[in-house]
Image 1: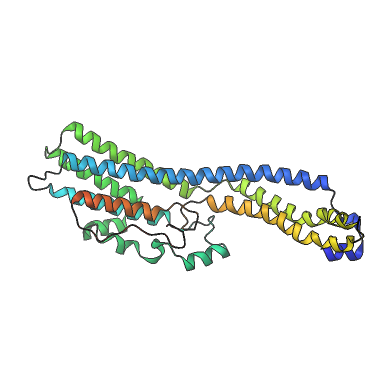
Image 2: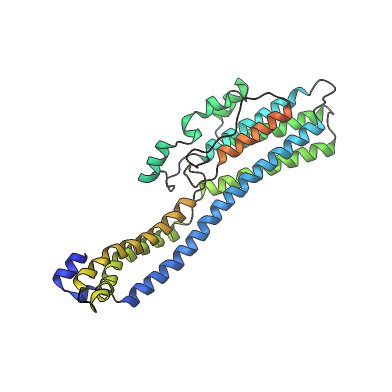
Amino acid sequence: MTLFLEVSGWSFLTVPGPILTIVGSALAISLAFKNQQCYARFNDGLTLSGQVSTASLVLANRLMATIDNRDAAPEPGLREIFYRHFAWLTALRFYLREKRSWENTYDRGNVSFLARLPSPESQSVLEDELRPYLSDAELQKFKVHRGDKEALLLQWQYEAIKDIHSRSLISEFIFTGLAGALDELLRLQGGLKRVKNYPYSRNYYSIAVIVVKIFAAIVPFSLFPYARELGEPAGIAAWTAWLNVPLSAIVGWIFVSMEKVGENSSNPFEGNANDVPISSITRRIEIEMRVMLGEQTELKPIEAKDSILF
């Protein structure tokens, strides 16, 4: 573009600076709004994931304090409730890692990243992950269930505490508290699925992308006269005109990068570098709950790879 303008001398093709300023200002406002909303979605996903950790430990502590008896034989259903919760965490993280058509996992750069640093869920199968936690009958029911599979696991938890209450092992007050802990987990599951299943508004996404492309296209036409002006006092305008190339590239790159950063933060469970580390969060929950059960586990917290935590 710079070569064409310099050789042809068609200055009428250049874009006045005020036009670039107007478009740039509109673009900056649009990107600021979009990025703020995308960050809000990421923060919502992170907050809900952290609350899952808290709610899980609340449930575990209530179970241990009200059902487990260290001086006598432990309640047979306690371990099953814990392991069913591990199954719920596993099913939930696999669900959140599923691909959606509007997500960025199909972008060339993200495809390359995921091939180099795949998420734990992409390297295993849900059924194999659930087998240590569920009985064969439960696993089969889970596989054939046509509705919300994660909610089915929580439904079994409700039934388990109801059975314990019916055998008069816990009081009505304790039963209500345990049911309330499950209610909170169900609410958090709904919040996480809301973030996963409903994308950032596509009209705001589209207008931002369109304006970025328009802006990047007119930048070289607008900065060209200013690049020439830099060298006119010294008589080297023909040389300084080529500064239009790096200046245009820098200005365009800034706005394109801002748009990409926002877009890559809008879907916080894709498994990309900037996503919520749901795999690590659920692993830590399982380790803590196994310790409460008094189990010796070989599970270890997931470690970051290349400063990326899944």
